[in-house]
Image (cartoon, rainbow, N blue to C red; front, top):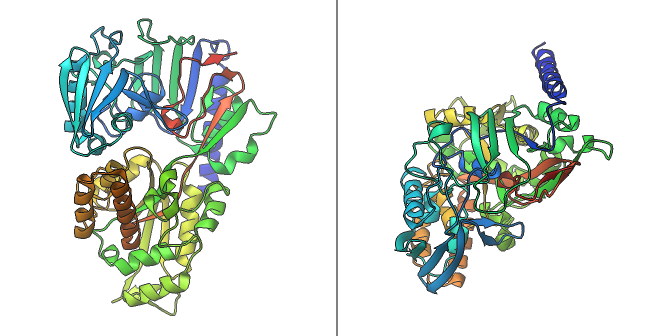
Length: 508
């Protein structure tokens, strides 16, 4: 009965979305670009951990450098960057760039913005912790790094490092000041954002006047909204809906295999996960090729090391654990850990049932159910809780969680990314992993003098962590975006989550 009611609710919600849009047909014109997303910004402050990429995506926030579709960092608010020595760079800023308030984007403003991010944003910290900034002219910044010969432009292209005017507090629309081609005029956190063209924009001005970004949390409603054709772009289309988009539908799909790794984060404060044997058993139990078929409609390839989804480290993509499950080994590891199989087909230790509760969200419902099924073959009492991402955040804050799935990008400054995941203070180190051997490898990585030395240490860290199994990697998350056939100028990108709005977009 509950399932029937849930399906009925989704159907009604979908009808409401489509009907509401249909009733506004007369209002929709070539001057309004509508984006439907699984989630949008929860705050107007880019130093919050879930805001920067959304602000960039809708054309409000800008970075010093922007990653293009080929993976190269291109100048944005910065005019150019020059390497002066193995540890020093010179960034020239655009004199014509200005915040929405009219304030110049000069060296003082940019340094203040970066230091604000350093102070407030744990996700941004790994990308600038090794960098120091000094004004060397009104529009010139000297950058010094404690790591030699790194790609500073790649670091400063990280989406949390949106340049913002620190004179503002970002509590509402009127107290927000960015530099983008679109200004925010209305904002309901995690529900809706409305923007209007910035007529004083420093760069190429877009032809479309307005942008509306709305949250459509339920994936079935999101698919139906896309099929209705009432949006110009709908993001986060689940792979299970791929077949619904035929040549006769108003939208075409733009799929990409993102440079990220779908990862099961384990709560290492739980006694059962403190045992390495249990962690390894959970990883050996997974047939990743089958998971991709069952949970991702066959889109993707297995990953067992977190950095393996980065093309530069594809040689260790499936190191330690293979693409297929080794359930015999997994079973032996659980036996070794003291979790014995009982006559009821479940495992117990000192009378305690081995239970694992996996939280999923977004497009990962089917993947979670497939993982549950595979773990159950070992006698694990596995459960899946699918819901809004906010439930995972709440569980993390309370400490009451076993494991959840999340995907972080593996593209960019790899040492910074790895530290973000596995150093004790890392913003993505949800399980509080703290391994003395890994910490020593990070210390060596911090002082590495050459790229060859740095890359070897990266591989050493990645394979060590995979073997230790504080997390379990599965595959890159397929990123599918539906684009209306009336849109011209849309650019497919491996980081589509920050690359929808551009100045070349036109609605025909």
